[in-house]
Length: 439
Image 1 (spheres, helix red, strand yellow):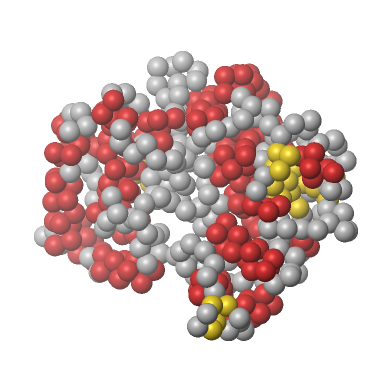
Image 2 (cartoon, rainbow, N blue to C red; image 1 turned 90 degrees about the vertical axis):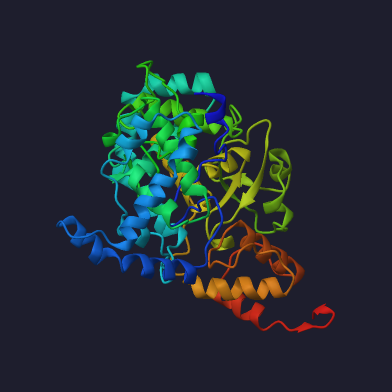
């Protein structure tokens, strides 16, 4: 891989999905819907063209866009033959555009997500595969220092251990998203990376299949991540994350190591807080030594001893009524694969279960009714007016929202667990803002 190619998109891999967030500029939902409506109106004309009728204006515009890419692609050393072969049967794909629309009415509680991701059947398959691939998992741990359980957890969540890696033509999907300028130039750059992969002979264009947003293979790497992090772990001469389990294992480990994985440090573990524990915002926002938490009466839920060294912070994804975790910097490394806390926790718990862990001790508050997207937007908007940093007002409860909620709770003398409930929303919405700020 040449230096000029390496310079292209060295940003971290982000996977699309309900719980993950892709990189790049963000469109508002109304703009996305307008784009979808405008583009889908060309579907009838597109279908007519398939039956020999005159191409629609949109199809002609798409082909002109593809042609306009050539100078930029050529500048990255891709051969014209590769370019033409990759786009030989590529068309604008309206179903790819439809997938960009968010579903505001859908909110999945973390316990529901965890239950689906860490199912008994997936755990059983994971244990069988961990035994079958133990040589490669051991090599990944030796070479990169990454725990086998975390590798298995990511493999299981991303593609069910390679059982389903996606059926969309990656070039067509990326070209469609680039054509509508979805998230700025992000998908155009990913398309160029995909063409570089084809030009390097890593895979044939017909086999380059993946998700609707271009995530590929058993690792679900975006093309730019493939160029930087994929490895030929079994020595076949190609980095085959589509068909080679060893390459998928090694590439995942390489990605995590490159993003700061610390050898011999756990991702974290479930803990019990004593009844008189004085929770502060700093307990969740700033790491402290394990010994400091032990000194305050915190115990591991599995009754094991704390590691002799290391530090962590508290994670309360469902507040004080749900399971509590002490997580380390390695948990944050898992989140570089997918920024969702639910995803990272599912990876960690699935990996632990595959390696024989007993599972969670505390129960989830399944009777709780999480805020819906519109309620979260209201919460974000009000907190922002009160002077708290909530990030983008997008209806998603991420780290920024949880941090803002904890800060508000601490300011009001509440236990700062960061858990956004309907009662808390009503309380925050009742706050008055005077000319001098919060009253």
